[in-house]
Image (tube, rainbow, N blue to C red; front, side, top):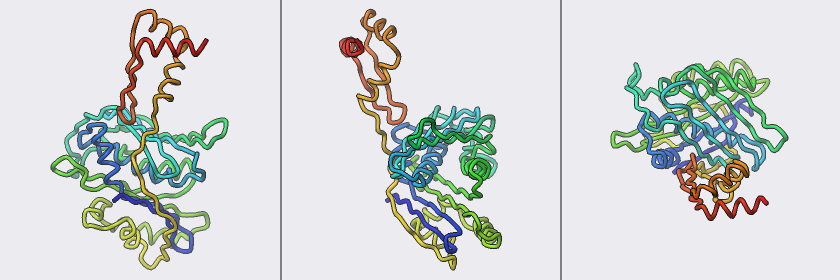
Length: 292
């Protein structure tokens, strides 16, 4: 079962958020009918979205992460909330590249490096906070670590993994963000950096049956690990007919009138969950009347 935990270590000098997201990524793969490469790219983004969402201060806050580097994936977009629930989509769920030079799914090649990673935080203010950095590798974890260090001045380690089984299901998915808090000692940072270089991949540890708590205990042995909160990360789309109606109304009276005059119906598909909303010509006529 998927689980997300918030923790600290070394007397609060280190902030940690980690999760297993195998079921969540499987659901996304099923909804979007992804190839293994697309599932790995979307799954990493959904995992880090869930982790970053859980760092939001207020339950009504949300954040959107976008990565678009000119590759065949045609970009990935994920929206996350403070309860660790996420939704997302990949521009091209059929992207299918050969394995990379180390025999792994080529997420970096699918994403590309000619573009930006963008994080948009909506905290209920007049304008959202937007931070962006040039894509470094397209592997997503490296790019997020670079984003935290450059845009938020918080040195961070980001590990993300999605393992697709031979039967094209998600065998393991998860990840963690580890951040050094202001005033943390360089000695502690050096020890942690060494340990992170030596550990197996996240998906290897999950496949071996380790929970997210087991993984963090393994990394932070003798470092005063304290787990403060548990959440269940889920794939959850909040679309509704009312929201889609508002989007349809936003095209303007003139365009709605044209649809009515031409006797047309409209089918609107939600990018995030592929749910279809049908608006008959009569429905569109009613919407038009409501504008008057």
